[in-house]
Image (cartoon, rainbow, N blue to C red; front, side):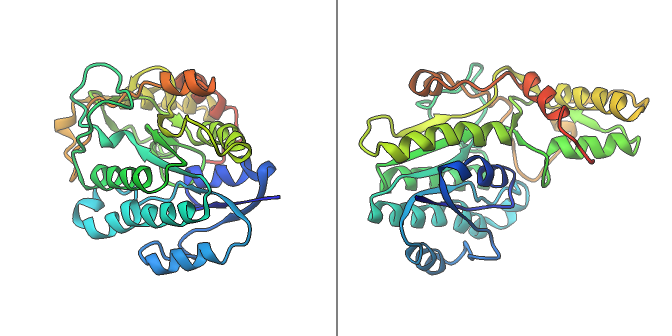
Length: 295
């Protein structure tokens, strides 16, 4: 039986991965309670104590974009240095590594979808450290899949979707930015796509499709439109009468870290290589709303 290491088990993607990858083998899922990701020696010794390890999947990340501006060293340790150690250990074992990056590696100045070969240009510490992490993984272990994600949300943790639902239930109508564009992507869809690719990678190590891929929902929207859909659904679900959120430009909602104004990711490479294309963001949203949400 294959042994698979999953980091960040309490995160949005990590939590889903522990379920979607379970049919592929024995899962060892860790988070900060088990391994301090600011300590390369702890990471290295933990990995070396796992017998029969066949795959490392690393969704763990420092994701507080604004706080990262004041904690660049901590963000670097988790987003760049830790993935480098995992890449070194997986390469030493001759096994694949799956690592997750972000649309924040781009500056958002492009007016069409970003492809995997477009120049990067992160605007803040979070994006820069995530870029350093993906570059480290790619340079250290040739058997890698790096998946860049966009606007991840799910049914656990802290994310835009759950925040809007809670505000709707409190009859609090927020002001939401309308000039930042991307594709909200359900963490479960990310995990399910990963499972399909991981299953194949475990069977066939000698391949020519290793590399960076964009893994995101289809379609394009902005934060205000996404929030409006959430409020409309919350009104129906809970019998509320909230007005829709107010649309504001980004400069009226200043944040510590700059965000890319346009970070839509082209997923054509993923579709052509693996035959995988995630549903449109609205279709994913409807699927999430069909879940038993206790929010």
